Length: 413
Ligand code: PHE
Image 1 (cartoon, protein in one colour):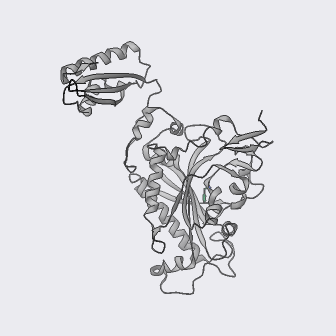
Image 2 (tube, rainbow, N blue to C red):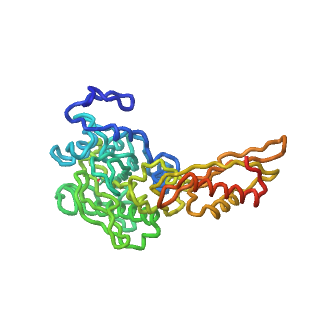
Image 3 (cartoon, protein in one colour):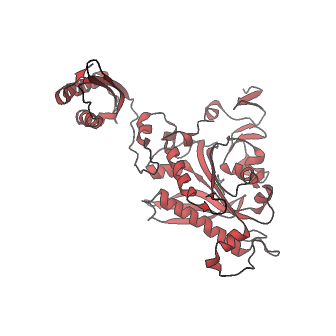
């Protein structure tokens, strides 16, 4: 059923018995919802950017974190699994969990696939944001494509211990690595407990403060760190928050496995934390979006609710109808002074009530000959509980025209 080669992003990939991508999944590559202006994931990305840009590196005179949000989701199995120590027989490698292009190439299952490349390129603190792909059943909270933000911060001995002088006092014999350190529940072999604890504190403070900023209204509720395991971190935690008696897992994180740093070309001079969070999950909580499939809609009833310039603006999403929109334009001549659009919006809503979904000024010009302004408004009608008939809409539309003439003295074109 597959051609011998698939052409993706202008590159040819040979197919084989591992190939299991489909048209629908491939069509998502390059959409980059997190870069689409005014998309809810775009606003969340801006908020992450803003939060992490506040940390400043005095030595480099630049923000501490670099933000990379444009890496291709087509990666090698080496990047997605081997580079971060996922064992050869691990379940997360199976065909039933991933979208393979061929035996050695897949759509990344997590942004952790880029940890090693980014560290190799010289970064020691970064976010990596992008679309990730997992074979999954579709339901209100699961979709086979979603977006993640990876965060990584590395520390040298100096950064870790001098940066924490007030906690530690003036000790100068502190080390990240010790010759006799064993792996146990609290740390990896080689790591000293004092180094691990300081990195853990930095990680947990960074995350808790982030969610206090993103979800100020829910921060009063409970949150908790749950022990877990990942092949690329140890120790590892999940961060959960409680909303209305329900616990939501927001991210996975931990102290990076030293072998991952070795794979990145570093010797025994760094220790770091990493986290990976799902953007959709957080945006759903932040905006009250009830269904993950809505992130993919082109319905302007959804998208228009997120049109604002300040990404920190907080809104609650109002459910859109499953019934179709009906679009009617209204053009009118007015005098030398034009109608204030908000007066027009009020009039339309006063007449059409809840059947008016959106009102948009789509055209305006001045005709110097007869010294008159013209405006065209687009009115989008939609009901929450039924399909509106043409007749019904025409009656409301005529009523709006009538009241416009009465109230503003305009001439309908
Ligand atoms: N990659 C993990 C996931 O997708 C999340 C994670 C990232 C956990 C970094 C720990 C450190 O589930």
